[in-house]
Image 1 (spheres, rainbow, N blue to C red):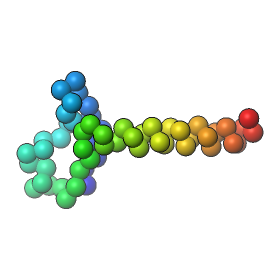
Image 2: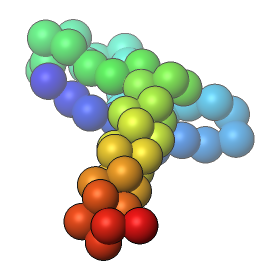
Image 3: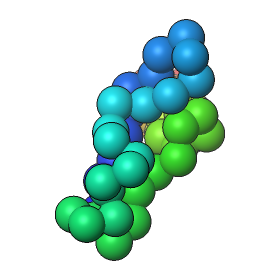
Image 4: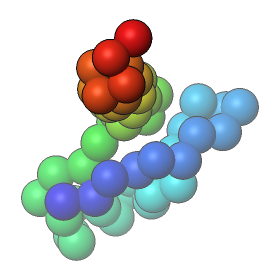
Length: 55
């Protein structure tokens, strides 16, 4: 499994898509791979922090 977290103005990631199938059984797409999970995690951590501080 390869997690591609890179993003460039050309809307491509950091992995070599032509040869990835020889090395990994799955990979995250770019764009749209880890971005939604990053946003979800930030929201979850914000909520947890607010609950701990009893705001």
